[in-house]
Structures are given as C-alpha cells and as structure tokens.
Length: 540
Image (cartoon, rainbow, N blue to C red; front, side, top):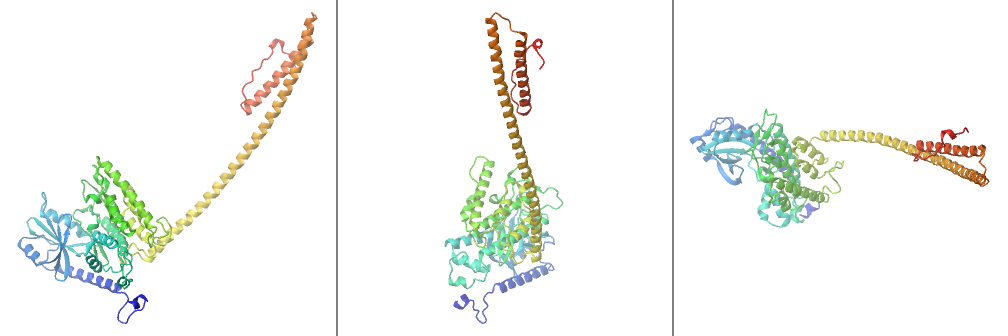
C-alpha cells in the first residue's frame, strides 16, 4: 500500500485497472449485441419483427430462460433478471389490463422498437406464455437503478445501511474510490485513480439528457421519467420503462389527455383539464431527476428533497401545486449555497464565463418552472450541460463528450458575441456621455437665464420703488398746495391739476410696463391700476 501511496507502481500490478475495465465492458457490450442480432435468424426466437409468439411455443420458450434474480416491479409488471445463452436480459411480465388485448399491450411496447441509442434499453423480444400475460425481453439487465445508487451514497455518508451490500453494488458499477463520501482509509487510497460515485452521477446527468433528446427527436415521449426508470451498469446509464410512452409521429400538436406518470415526478400542467405538451412534461420530470442527483452531489440530505417534492394537504389542487413550487424554490436556493463550497465548483457560479465546471442549479430551475413555455428543450439542455461541464465536460461520460472542436467553436461564438457586446456597450456609453454633457450645458444655460431674469427683476423693482417714492413726494406736494388753496378760499390753478394728473399718468404707465415684463418672463400677478378718466388724460 505504501508503494501505491508514494505513486510507485509494482511490476505486473498496474496502478489502475479502470481503463481496462471500461474496455472490457465495451467489448462485452458489443459481443452481446452481436449475439442478440444473430438470434433474429432463429425461428424459435420471438423477435419483435415477427408475429407474436403465444400458446405452447411461447410457454416452452419462457421455460428455457434461466431466472437469475428478481429486479423488482415496474409501472405495469414484475421484472426479473434472466439469461439466454451467455446474455443476461431483463424479463418484464405485464398482466393484461381490463379493456386491453395482448396485441394492444404489444403495440404499446413496440414504441421502443424505433429507438436505437446507447443510453436507451433495447426491446429484443415479445411473447405471450399465457392468455392474460405479455412478456418483454429487454437488454441489458442492469445492476441497479439511479434511485438505489443515490440512497447508497447517502447511507455511506451517514454510516447507515448494509455497507457490505452497498460496496458489492458499487464494485459491480466499477465505483471503488469512496474518498469523496467517506473518511480516507487505506483501502480507499488503493483505488484513488478509479471513478468515484459523485463522478459517476455527474457523468450520468449529460448521458440521460442525451438519451432524452434522442427520444424527443424521434417523436417518442417517455411520460414517466423518474430515478427508478434510469438503469445503471458499469460506466453506463440507460433510460428504461417505456410502458406508457407515446409515439407522436405526424402530430402537429403533441398533446395528451389524462394524468400519466408518477405523481411525485409529474409536471403540474398535467393536472389541467385542457391537456399538456408531452415533450415539455418530460422536461419537468427530467428536471426533478436532476434535482435529486444535485441534492446528493452538493451534500444535502435526501430527506430535504423528499419533503420539497411532497404535496401538502391543502383544500384545492391549485394550492397544493403552489405550495410545492414554493418548497422546490427554497430547496434550489439551498443547493445553490451548498454548490459554491463543493469541489469542483468552489469560487464559480453558473452565469460566470469560465472554462471551469459550474453548478447546474440554474439550469434545473429552468427545467422545473411551472410555465411549460419557459422550459428548455432536451437538445438545448444537452448543449448547456456540455458548456457548464467546463473544458473537461464533467457532466458527460466519455461516450457522450463532445469533440474538442465543438467546445472550441462554442467558446469562439461566445467570445465573438462578447466582443460585439463590448463594442455596443462602448458606443452606448459614449452616447450617454454626450447626452449627459448636453444636459449639463442646458442646465448651465437655464441657470444663466435665471440669474439674468433675477437681475432684470431687481432693476425693475428698484425703478418701481424710485418712482413710487417720487410719486409719493409729488403727491404730497400737490396735496399740501390744494389744502393751502382751499384754506385761502382759492381754487387750484389748472396747471397744478395738470401736474398732479401727469404724475399719476407716468406712475400708471410704469406699472403697466413692469406688469407686462413680469407676465411674459415671470408670471407676476396682475397689478390693479387706477388710470385717470379719459377726459382727464394728458399727453406726456
């Protein structure tokens, strides 16, 4: 062990067998597919391109299959692990439902026939050993499903569960480096170069998105996306259980009535009476699956996720949907804070332009928004995951990583767009500076005009005051002359009366001019003037 810790390699004992394990797994996969293809030439093989096997022939064929294990129960039937020759398969027994014939069930299952993708399970045979039962043979037979792996990782973190059973499953998945989820120990250091469970989960996100995009591009809607329908093998992930999937080829409006799928993972619009888009409903369910994975990736308890997914006991369905959406948003906020302190996402955020990997919380938020029109399509989600994964594309396995030329092209486009935005930003900044300069010039002009008007008003007010004083003085002199004349019994001379009237006339004319100037420039209120009668008016 000490040699390995010091990075020494013993002769005949390579430091890591992960690469060879993956090569062996790929070779084994290719070999099994070749064997399955050869079975189609066998008349006793119930291939999907042949008429349905039933009756005694189907019963004899069913008996030849060797049952290896029970894999559990799917949405519509029991699933077993069986072998046919050297190939392991999953046998799904589907009981005939009321109102359906065996041919109806087979027609539904053949939706999978048009799918040929490395991350989608393959339907290889169908037969009816009994009148009330249809059997499907599906390749491959998985080690476990995604839900089991997520629980196993949390059990190891908490020191709960059957550790021996968990380690056996992880070994079968070629996951041996547990240093990221358990305290370091000598046996874990031996496998430090192998894949860890968190790396497996990150890779699975992109591979699942790629499979979903493939299904949608081929007009197939799954309608029951959830962790238990995502199967796992060593370095492989498969989208499975297309029991209620739909082939929507030739339909302009991909709408479905009813409430398909599993309640916890179902899109909210599926509860509406007017139907919903099957494709966008798949995206919502896929977003919840990614949220489940992110909960484990960012070291948050699965119990918190389960609580967020739970519908509260409310009176109306609308209230239930609203409350659940609010809880999901709170859970997303918690994941955001945890992601920023979780390697390799420390000191990065999703909106940051960097070649380093970034968290997927914001992407998940766009997938599970309550408005279907705001959700991304599967192929766009796949593209975004390639960019969020950084230069090493950590959200995709080796099987689905984009060529480096694709990444370079994306970054070139981003940099070109960024350069264009900078130029536009500089242009707008210059325009703003010009407008601000004009605004300051206009304000200075207004200030100058205001001061000029204030000066003019002050001059006019001074003139008015001088004239008022002069008029008062003149009026005082005229008044005294008139009083003296009256006391002497003498009538004022016409010249005295004319002087008094001339002063009043001059004073009133000055007031009129002052009023007109103030009304035009300053809106000074009207000054009531008392002009002398026209008969008494005299020329200046």
